[in-house]
Image 1 (cartoon, rainbow, N blue to C red):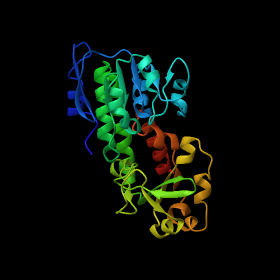
Image 2 (cartoon, rainbow, N blue to C red):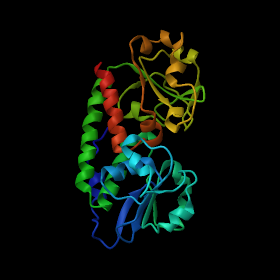
Image 3 (cartoon, one colour):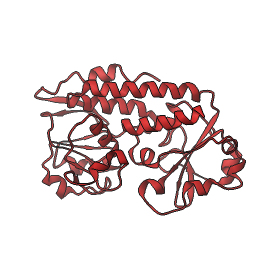
Image 4 (spheres, rainbow, N blue to C red):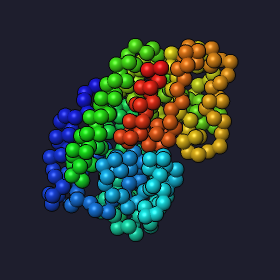
Length: 298
């Protein structure tokens, strides 16, 4: 994998905040902004993670659950603007934002939001999470004159990724499981948690996995038959605050207990909010890398 810092950083920071017109790189290509935005709104938690890490003031965010390190944004003075899927357009318009940033879940509302305010789409590609994060960090770092801060954060993440990759190379096979509503699905190197394979370096326990947001439905029998060395689990119900059978209970059964992963103590319950709600944010990824690095050391 190429390093975080390179041509993308140089390109994204070429136009400084003092220019009359700033061109930024987005998921929909390059976009020209008339001026450096002062009133900023984001409808995506990963982008909020970036803006907060760069200390860029934010006027409004989506309502709902936020991880502890972003919990300050759950109340005043930050406007609560509905859900990513259904943002409150009236409240959004009342802020008269200079820039609205959509991504992921909220990207489907791009046209509607763009009709009332300058809008950019910073949706990430889950199969190329590092490249997407690099683009978003350098884009926002350049836009808000935070290039050094963005570069420092990216360099720290690059170092952690390299450390995990080195150890994961000999760690054996891995299976990623999402639990929700008493059901399970697995996600491979083309799925929403592909960074475990593509950038952290674990070997997929299953080469062919149905791609897509919802993954491939699986059973306890499937887990035993696949018999991975590592199992990484994301509990969607825990992430969204919905009552349901905890992932720990679902997997604690006679079939899964026979797997190599279980017998070696290599079933890892990932932080659900970081993985399911935030994703490509610098601190969410830093926390994820720290947890997996710790597991590899045990």
